[in-house]
Structure formats: structure tokens, C-alpha cells
Amino acid sequence: MYCVQCEQSNKGGCAVKVGSCGKTAEVADLQDVLLRVMQGVSAYAHRAAEKGARDAEVDAFTPHAWFTTLTNVNFDAKRITTLIVRALEMRARARALAESAGADLSNLPEPATWNPGTSASELAAAAPMASILRFTDRDGPSVVGLRDLILYGLKGTAAYSEHARVLGTEAAEVSAEFHRIAAFLATDPTGIDALLTEALAIGALNLKVMEMLDAANTGRFGHPEITQVRMTPKAGKGILVSGHDMGDLEAILRQTEGKGINVYTHGELMPANAYPGLKKHPHLVGNYGGAWQDQQKEFDAFPGAIVMTSNCLINPEIKGYKDRIFTSGPVGWNGLPHIENHDFGPVIACALAQPGFAEDAPEEFVPAGFARNTVMGVADTLLGMIGKGEIKNMFLIGGCDGARPGRNYFHDLAMATPEDSLVLTLGCGKFRFNREDLGDINGIPRLIDVGQCNDAYSAIQIATAVAGALGVGVNDLPLHYAISWFEQKATAVLLTMLHLGIRKIHLGPTLPQFLTPEVLGVLVEKFDLRPTGDVQEDLSRMLAAA
Image 1: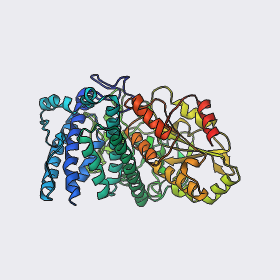
Image 2: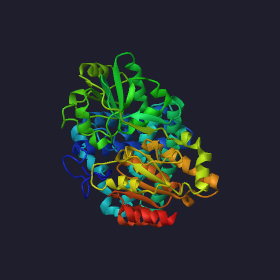
Image 3: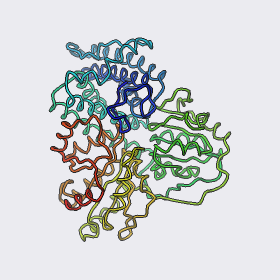
Image 4: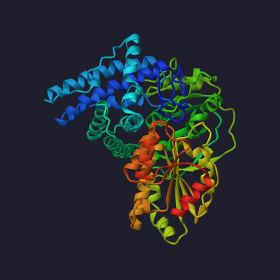
């Protein structure tokens, strides 16, 4: 096991029996094997695509398989082994497709023909060939760092693609580009410029994927509306739905109609309360808890059933709720019941067997629903306020939260922003400050919750529209970025921002370990990427540049 893919990794990387996230060395090694086989799948799928051929089943399996390897998603060795077997079948299928299309199958990269076996002993023996460490001695830290940047960016993009896919939205050109970049990675490239080019290509791809996901969400559930989301529980039985998957949330809401069960969101699903197609269900009563890193305390205190639909699962065995938590989609933990085919009957039965909340807690609400459609609906008002100097600065403060020290930076920065500025936020980083009262500017709330981490697309569209209306570039706006990094979805979003040429992003609280000083130097030179530091010093620098 060797892993540096997230902010909670041990210093120098997780190379232990159990990583910081709770992932065992066995699972980590199996995930490495799965990804290496998947690069082989893409090698064939890419060559087939060049001949105009594609296989919808291969394209559908690809993002799901990649998604299972993200931080805090799947910890179940049996499930990962099953995926490896399936990946080998998909690789054979992709090869047959390429052959039938008349593709050139000479000079295939090693993952296209690699045979890791399928037994536990064979897979354990094959794991070193799939580890990212295998390149270190040959290529040096900068090449390895950029390879990791591509690998983890692809993981994040795959996750967003899977979120869109399960809602029925796919695009052949997106699958083809994903296969192309994964096939590039399979060739073991070493050129710094070529690696950086492909990293930015992931940013472009992820922008398309986030646009697809936005269309999938709004097409199915409507555009988010300004909504006061209840943050305290109500009396009665309950189901708590965590993760990101609004399709699963919708299925749970439909299957619990008339059963006397209140449904709550948790973590990144809180923005779901603002979608008309979801909030029309009266038993979606609000949000319970905050960001993912507090789930063990919050899940333990929740007197009902719990469903984890995507990242970010933490070891459920430490507290007393293992007998009432379920997984769905790409998520897995050894011994936890997994929901198949969106049949949440076992969850409903569990919820009815639990005591539920005995009484209503005092009401507390936070506003949500300020996605691009809502904000652009008052664009003329905002532009007028900017033109009059009533709004002098805008800050995008958000991203992934985490447990390590230093993340109070984002709360403190939000609280320190001037009263004539707006604060846009997204992702679970918002829970650091979304209950704070930042006031308003002429009736416009200063704190604007854009949504989930993937709703960076909304924030980008807002910034682009404002810049266009003012006749300036996005980098010329008085818009400042403070992004809390944690895992691979954040990596994909960062690459999208870099692809768009956005500069002066403050990233923290610690930088990814795979960004070597040399790679960081390249990003600083090209994009003026900045590590977060002292709040007041960073804020002064932001305001001086406005």
C-alpha cells in the first residue's frame, strides 16, 4: 500500500496496514490493480473510438469503476475484486470492439495485456506493478507528481460523470475523451509539458462533465430555488441520506411516501432541499448534521436509518450505528448491507424499527438555493450594485472540508471579508460558516450558497456572466478564490479552474503531497497558485489586487 491521493494521507504517504481513511492495505492494492486494468480498457476503447466505434456498456462501467477508488468510498475487498473480474471482461470486450472496427492494435501499452489474475494470492502478487511507486526511481518526483495529478483528476471527473450517468445523462464524446486521457496515462509518459497539457485537458473535460451533471440535476429536479433549510430534527421516525446522489434521495422519498418517516439530508446533500422536484415531498424535512468528518458523532446520535450514497464514508464500526447504516452506488464497507436496484425496502424497515426523534428540536434554518439560475435572475441588480460600488469584492470560499488543523482558516476568512463584499460558497466547506450571519447588501444576502462541490459549474457560470456583462475577463473581476482541498473531486475542479485560466487561487490548508516543489513551481509560474497562509495577510493581498 502506498497512497497520497487525499489531504488526510500520512506525511510521506500512507504505507501502512490501514491508511488514515480506514482503508486496508489489501483494499488499497486492489484499487491500484483495478485502475491499471481500467487503463487497459481505455487503451482499447480509445483506439475503437478513433474508428468511430463505442460500446455503451464499457462506457457505463468505466466511471463507476474509477469512482469506487476515490477516498472514503469503497472499503470492501470482495466488491473491489468483483470489479477487477468485471474490468477484465470489459477489457476483452473493448479489445473485440477495436478489432471489429479495424483499429491498429500494435504497440499496445502494458495495461492492455497485463494479467493480474483474479485469486487473492495472484492479485496480491500483481499489486506492486500497479502502484504509483513503480515510477519514482525511473522518472523522478516531478514526473510522478504530474502523473498523479492526472490520475487523481481523472478519478474526480469519473465521479462527477457517474453522478450524471445514474441520472440518465451521458455523452459519447465525454467517454471518448476520458478513454483517450486514461490511455495516455497507460503509456507511462515522462514529458513534463505533455503531462501538464493532459492535466489541463482533464480540466476541460471536467467542465463538460459538470455541465452535464448540472443539466441532469436541473432537468430532473428543476432549478434550485432560494429555500430556508431546516437544520434541526422533527419528531418522528427518520432516514438520513448522506453523500451526493440526488437520484437515490428521490427514490427514498418516493418509497417512503405515506409511511410516517421523515427524510433528512446530510453533508453534501444539503443543497438538495432547494430543488423543486425534491422539496415537493413534505417528508423531506431538512438537513441533519454538517460536513463528512463529523459523521461518526452525528450518525451515532441519529435515531434512525442511514444511507451513504457516495463519498465520504468513515469507519462505521467505531460507534454504535453499524446495524443501521446502508451503502448504495459505488460505496462499500465489509459487512454493511448494500442496496441494489434502488430498492430501499431494507432501509425503510430499519427506520421503522428505530425510535426516531421523540420531539421537535428548536427551529433553526439556513438559506440555500443560490445556484446560477437564481443568481442570474437578479443579475441586473447585482451589476448595478457593482457599478455603484455597493459591491466592491466577491469571494469564492468553499470546497471539501476535513478534520486536520488549519481549516478554521476558511471560517475566519469568510468572517473577515468586508461588509461591501459577497461570499459565494459551495461544497461541505460551507459548514464552517454557513450558520454565521454575514448580513446583506441592500437586501442581497452576503453569503450565497451555490450548492454542492460539483456546483463549481454554477459559480463559474456566474463569474463568466458578470465578467461578460462588465466587458472584462474573469481574472479582471474583483473575485477572489480560497479553496479548501481534500480529495480527488477537488483536484478535478482545480484543474477545471486552471484550464479556464483562473489565477491567484488560494489553496489549502495544506497542499497535495503529490504536488512536488517542482510541479508547484510550474503551477505558481503559470497560474499564480498560492498556498493559504495568514488570513489577514491573504485578505490584504486579495483586496490590494482588486
